[in-house]
Length: 549
Ligand SMILES: Cc1cc2nc3c(=O)[nH]c(=O)nc-3n(C[C@H](O)[C@H](O)[C@H](O)COP(=O)(O)OP(=O)(O)OC[C@H]3O[C@@H](n4cnc5c(N)ncnc54)[C@H](O)[C@@H]3O)c2cc1C
Ligand SMILES: *[C@@H]1O[C@H](CO)[C@@H](O)[C@H](O)[C@H]1NC(C)=O
Ligand SMILES: *[C@@H]1O[C@H](CO)[C@@H](O)[C@H](O)[C@H]1NC(C)=O
Image 1 (tube, rainbow, N blue to C red):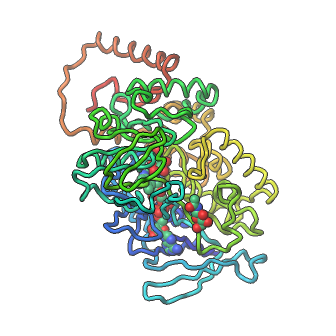
Image 2: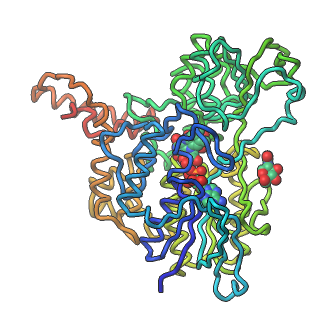
């Protein structure tokens, strides 16, 4: 029997949830309140309340191979760190390839989701929608997937900033920021150094008189441009994770040392108290250059506002400030869900593995995309959706409520220890371990030992290469015949966009080839023993020691 599933939202999470339903033979109906797909990645000239909004300069902080869905490698010619408009193109390609659009009802807002009277027996939900014309309708579904995004409400902690109510300049949240237009020659203070704060400070500093970037705790700054010019995030392999788990503090120190070689975080006033892995780093290639040219000045926390002046905790004062941008993060809510499901446990939502509310007697409601890791959301949301749809179908049962609660508390404890957790990053997960923890039960976690016996070349890429999402399509439910090829050709797609000017190279003599082979072997060994960071970048690009054709 076809089971009807409601998918709320058609962003990254909603699209992949529709796809997961189709793969499992479920019948998805997606309700999207706007007129188009893409969610956050659909740029809006004017911020739309209740939705994620981005600024014009947003470029993905993970590279295309890492943000991809597991069965649709991004076109080779797309740049590695795509502009937001190119991310939207990729999402359109995904929707087209898998015929997702026909399942989406646009301009339909879900206003209420409640259990049916016979929920205990059927696990069914009533989903109430409102059309653009204000027409309400109630539909019954066997299951619901909530994919409404968590960058939707600006978090504006004004009470922490005495004097802001009488501040003479303009102030707004990063959610409202579109571009530096109108800020020419202004004096601007940006508060908060998350990814948005860093981006916006850099953006504005190109036209403003001066930008002051205020940060309470500092941050580690990593570039998109990694060793050798390859995308930095491709340096994260399963092997790296294993080594990291064995020697966490040593690896942390190694990474910090590497980052300080690019620029000394202490010298630049950015050094945080916490280690590299204790918080998701800021991805920004331009910030150090803006600081060295004096266009951005790093400041400590703001103590108070006085007229048009900003007073920092170290006693320093900046006068005649025109604009303050609060890059202080986001909040989220599910106004349409029953109150009992909105209860938070401590600072995070009551959700088993960030997906299922443990208290329900029937597990027919899943939240998708409400996690945050040192990696892209696409693969995370996709794996959650694959797991959730199999739970809906009864192919998998969840542990008892008691066990789930216990696991949730333990996991929260661990995360507290691992990360400098604050109210503002409650959704943090360890990227690969989290993916694997869902892939295990689904039956799609790559078995590397077995792979080494069967297909050593592939196994080497899976273990030492970047942990790209195609790894989760090699076997098990949802297996994709193209997955192996996608992995073996991933470096080709990374290299392709760089081939804009052919650089001629002399033919190597056979003697040279031997030297190159010997050298690469030695380099490999060195990376392994001495310097873990660029390990995968050295092992993996097939043409790193050869010239690309
Ligand atoms: C500035 C910025 C940069 C980012 N950069 C990256 C990055 O480089 N890499 C990365 O992995 N992540 C990044 N993120 C995180 C981002 O959240 C995810 O990439 C992703 O877009 C989240 O997708 P989503 O589908 O979960 O939510 P969204 O994209 O927010 O989509 C939610 C959809 O649900 C719809 N909706 C909401 N409520 C309702 C309702 N009641 N009824 C019907 N429809 C509804 C909305 O209209 C929207 O279309 C960034 C976030 C920000 C703010
Ligand atoms: C976040 O939103 C919830 C629900 O809307 C609200 O109760 C809470 O106070 C908000 N938290 C912050 C930090 O703004
Ligand atoms: C990219 O930026 C978004 C938004 O700030 C953040 O949620 C995500 O964790 C970042 N990803 C990485 C890999 O840093």
